[in-house]
Image 1 (cartoon, rainbow, N blue to C red):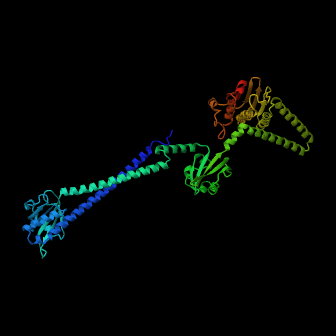
Image 2 (image 1 turned 45 degrees about the vertical axis):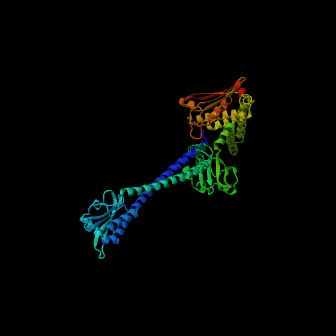
Image 3 (image 1 turned 90 degrees about the vertical axis):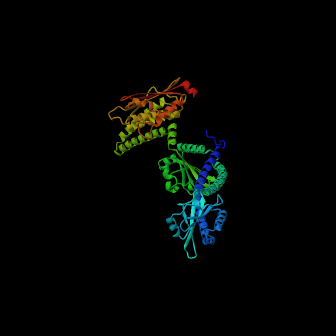
Amino acid sequence: MINARSSGSLHRQVRRMLILCIAVVVLLSTSVGLGISLYQEVRTRDQLLSNAAQMAADAPLLTEDIRADNAQQYLARTVQRVSEVDMLGVYDIKGKPTVFCDLVSGAGDASLLPELKADTVSRLCSEEKPVLSNDEMPDGADRCAYAVMRDENGQATGIVMAGLYLRSYHRTVLRVLLSYLLITLFALGIGSLLSVRFSKRVKRELLGYEPDAFRQLFLQRMDILDALDEGLMAIDEHSMITYMNRAAADILKIKVKDAIGQPLKTVYPRSTMARVLQTGKSEYNIGLESIKHVSVISDRMPLWRDGKVEGVIAIFRNRTEVTRLAQDLTGVQHIVGALRAYTHEFTNKLHVILGLLQLGEDKQAEEYVLHLTQTRAHSIGYISERIREPSVAALLIGKVYRAAELGIRFVLDPASELHGEGRYLPASSLITILGNLIENAFDALRNAPETAQKEVTVSIREGEHGMLISVDDSGAGIAADKLDRIFERGFSTKGEGRGTGLSLVKETVDAFHGTIRVESEPGIGSSFIITVAESANRQQ
């Protein structure tokens, strides 16, 4: 059973999911931002190094006498004041170091600087702007910028180098990483807070169900709705079909996937469901005359939300099978059939009489009427004397005329006796049993050869301790492999829409705790024997 209010695991699941999503987003954005920031830091560092080198190269003190002691002092002051520079050095025009100042030691030994190669000097002197190069850096340096010192005539007089140690770069990276770490932690904190609020909102929207439980419940209800014999169809406020189950699709002869999302007028042009959207009033037991192949009645109910009709749901009930079963259970079908056969037979006799009168054979017509009256009176009297229940007698008389139409000899066993008191079976149950068994016997003889003996014998015997009913036919018989299934609802060898008559007989007999036995021989015929005992009837 689904627990609709499980202990807060929904909140935890949604929160973990949101935190994970936020963490992934933050990680991706942090990675991208970190890469961009490091790239910007590198560019900024390079630009500062270039500016420091160019500033020193333009200093008048260095351009006048790069060997003076005050040049060493100038470099020391510059290195200490400019945080983006760790070392400054000065080379003469031949690339030999002349002055050097290192921030780490506080003093500098020019011999620690490697000499610049001639081609390097030539390349630097050919540039108008500072040049960044890693080719001939001092030990421990990570990046160096070189700028050329020029005199008033624009002639190169020396070269200034501004450098940065690797540890300074590490400090820059660490600073960036720490800043992004703080941003990430802050974002995760905000995300966690938002995830808690969002999970509570989701839980409210899911009516307190767990996601898995909600999905399972939804699928179960969809299966239940699809298993219903009643058709269900729903439309929204724009008369678009939002739901249709299998039964509704079968009634309307359309596929569910072709109906969902379509306008109602496209799928069912003659539907009046849309008027419920306007009136907001339910409609019940509406006969759908526009559906011809089945008998359908419909109920329509508006769907309300926040005081507004947001859709309509219709229930289609297929009454075709119910009507037919009701007729079988009450015997109406068999009584009507008997009356129809009687009327047909009577009409044929009238045609014979009319023909004789038109031919002027009045005497022969009179004799025919007297013979017909005597024969019919004898037949009716024969049945009425033995069967004193009027409705059962009427059924058997009708079956006599029906058998005559089909060329079948119908025989009521002379030993038959029914008192009509309903001692063992009520008249309606007798009509259900006899009507279905006799029709089943007629069906067994329909395709028999013309030369074959076609006969149906009925026996009804009512005694002090029980009742015996038997219906025999001289048909082709029932195959042995089908005898065990003939009472199954829907099983028939006569095509679709059959297979209910014998099942109704079995259900009726079982209801009165009786027994039914079938004896059949291929090529000889079949017998259905029903017994209802007095003690069983009293239990009922």
